[in-house]
Image 1 (cartoon, rainbow, N blue to C red):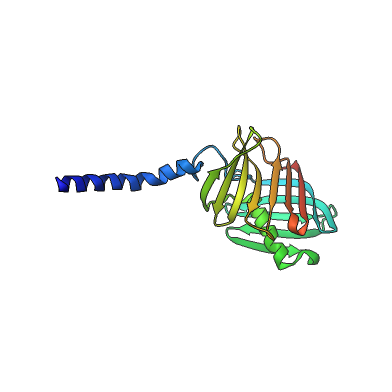
Image 2: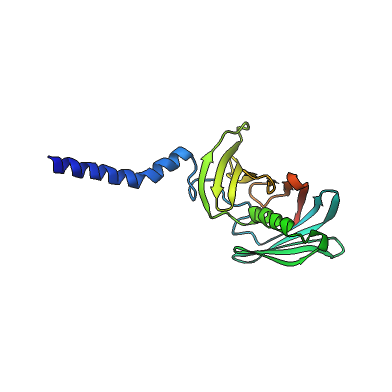
Length: 212
């Protein structure tokens, strides 16, 4: 009898261990890798896009064109130049690398480059390191908010409820590296407008779509 109860208890314990991740995931809300919500603003089908835009940092203002282009499966190039063809910066996100091909001297500061890398990575590279997504409260019934934890940090993701597309990404638990990224536009296409701000250092990037 004791042997039977022991084996029964062991069996229940075994099934609990197997099912606990699923149960916990359901309690937390969205389980990474499942559901209808996108994990990328620009998905794997993205090839290239041209945006008219500006970069403001403190009292300095730069305006021109942002050219985003996929170079390979794991590499995207970001070029910001004025309309006369002078480059302000030319960056490349290649896997975990951030390659600075060229950069305007006044922008070539280690802390600023690190922040720009983080901002463009949030915009262009899907986060495949998510460990937890917990649903939060939204005042807007058309939007869904999740608290996200990953190797990149802690964030709040705001989604369009109907399309499942990302509308906003905000860093949390960060002071100097705080980012607020907003995207606007047709859910079927890439964003028509992008606004990235780092309020602590008064950095603002604004982009308006021109063409592919």
